[in-house]
Image (cartoon, rainbow, N blue to C red; front, side, top):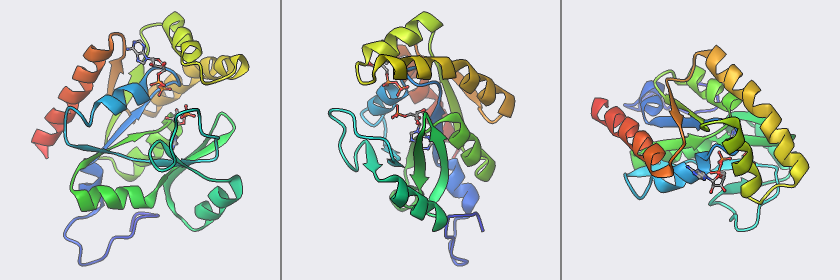
Length: 206
Ligand code: ADP
Ligand code: 5GP
């Protein structure tokens, strides 16, 4: 049995089938993962996984829509109860994909997009090799920094911290060989088109 996912012996589907419905998008903070992810359900039938996090909500973020916002104690408790498919500490906060999200994907019979960091993407890909893993990149460093600062949600020291981590995250992703494809988010509509086309291709293969 795959850790953290309950599969009844009578289930027709195995973990591989869940894996085929999973699409991971990772990449440095600020490359535009959330922006691209939010554009996808309007273009195709797709569910977005909602992660749990200990970080505070940014202005405009809603509980159960952007994240499940929980305390560190509650997060630790859920780790000990195996309630995350994967989890990682990112920029000093805990983030994890609840097991229930994968169960939701199975119930809906839809593809599910997981917008998670590289550590999490690697964990998912190792549990579910059939998942499609996309690494999203900014066209260049200057653009990445401008996007991090322009988002206006993080103080300057947090922007610096996230920018400094970008190269390491890309290196880790490439070295892991877990990522199937890289998408450069230069013009937004082109990046969304590229991801839609990857997902449609994947769906045809299913
Ligand atoms: P991430 O989820 O990867 O951290 P966001 O989706 O929050 O990144 O995007 C960071 C900032 O960059 C946001 O202000 C967003 O509006 C902007 N942005 C995203 N994609 C593009 C793009 N292709 N061109 C210009 N700005 C973009
Ligand atoms: P943010 O604080 O900007 O929303 O997210 C910070 C980082 O955490 C991003 O790289 C984002 O992809 C990642 N992240 C969000 N949810 C999860 C999750 O469930 N698991 C992991 N491993 N990373 C996540």
